[in-house]
Image (cartoon, rainbow, N blue to C red; front, side):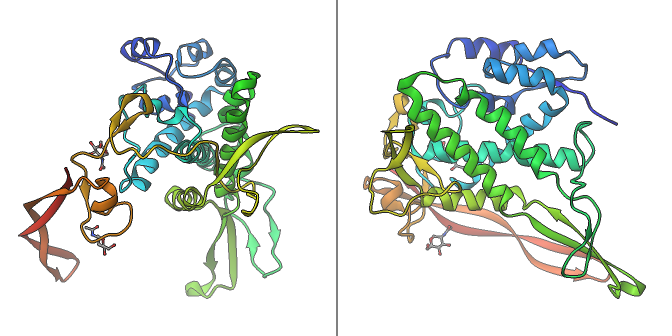
Length: 356
Ligand SMILES: *[C@@H]1O[C@H](CO)[C@@H](O)[C@H](O)[C@H]1NC(C)=O
Ligand SMILES: *[C@@H]1O[C@H](CO)[C@@H](O)[C@H](O)[C@H]1NC(C)=O
């Protein structure tokens, strides 16, 4: 059955948002935390989705059945950001359901580029999945993938309709930037558009072929295959790699208008699939509301690691405290015929280091 759903905020969130309109983030991401799902078709309710810009509300009205996937895409993006950044000083934790990351994304930093790429990828994936599972009227599987392949298998089954998902992501997620005519913010809009696109490329450029064998006891006389997206975790890993290799750019006037160019011309020119940023990140060592930093006091760190999760870097040279902690673990697991496993619970003492 087709779910025609529309989501609205609790009044509480609406009030919170109004009192914090200065916060510049990807505000539509707040959809991830919407509680109530209204299962009626009432496009006028799109206007109540605070966090959306005007053009996004219009898109919402025309595509109500897609909005549940947009919400899911936002949720995927926030969860993946927290997973990928779990060992970093800024770990993508949110202040509250509406303000989300607070001021962190206000500046055009690498962190901002990462979140933009993740969220446009999140929407592309969530919408595409909904298409494949038949939840959205307007789209289904990709019917252009058919016939016999040069490798000798038959295209069949449901190929993910990535074209629809990425097109919707582009329309909805990019809407916020396209609205900006403000010269002062033009560089930032270009940066966001670039990174949104890079996020979608991380999905599009890595489609897989999945196959099934048919024939007597799996003899594979006939092999049918379809095109499928990578998992969102794999996409997240890929975007994290792009974050690690992100390129610093600046806005420059050219004959054909303004564009983003390399700050260091000796570096390799970024491609559409790379992340770009305009401003170096703060160090996130100290709590600071203005930049949305929580600081790293009390954060768990790894004594032996030389990377950013190591106590030296994580604690910004302040040193760390060590605590002994008892944890319970499953142990001495035995396999019983057939088919279950029974384990005991063992206690183990570990050392935990936290930043001073
Ligand atoms: C993320 O950082 C915040 C603030 O420093 C901390 O409270 C939280 O526990 C951290 N989350 C994880 C998963 O480490
Ligand atoms: C700490 O870092 C070391 C070296 O990078 C790594 O081998 C180890 O698994 C890490 N420990 C934890 C608990 O993450």
